[in-house]
Structure formats: C-alpha cells, structure tokens
Image (cartoon, helix red, strand yellow):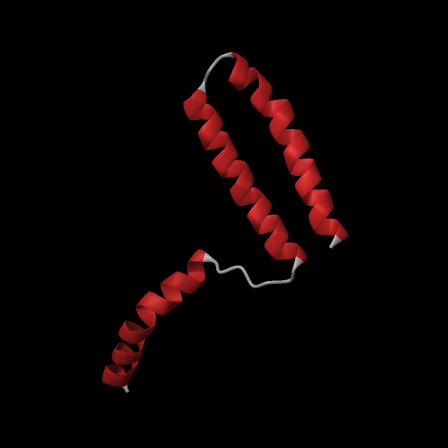
Length: 77
C-alpha cells in the first residue's frame, strides 16, 4: 500500500512542477498530452508494484502469428 501512495505522491508533485509553466503559457494541448503520458507511466509503475504481468509487443506478435506458424509446421512435416 505504501509504495503505491509514494509513487502517486511523486507523480502529483512532478505534475505540479512540470505543468505550472504549461498552465501559465496556456498550452492546453501539451498539458493534456503530458498528463496522459504521466498517467500511463504511473499505471505501469502501479502494475509493477503489484507484480502483475505486463504484456509486451512480442506477446501480440506470438498471438497473431501462432496459427500461421503452426500451419506451416504441419505443411512441412
């Protein structure tokens, strides 16, 4: 529980430090993109703290190409 609170607190502090100049210059598009990227990074940090499996792009490729590979293996054997 405490690591999650610590990561969340660090994320909020970083957001306030980095977003203040963007708010002053009224760069709302950059604020939204920065917030999205920060939240996605925080989500991955939470998943790592909770020891949850994070899928990789290689998992997607294995899922997509496994039927093709198995049919080629059957054809060649």
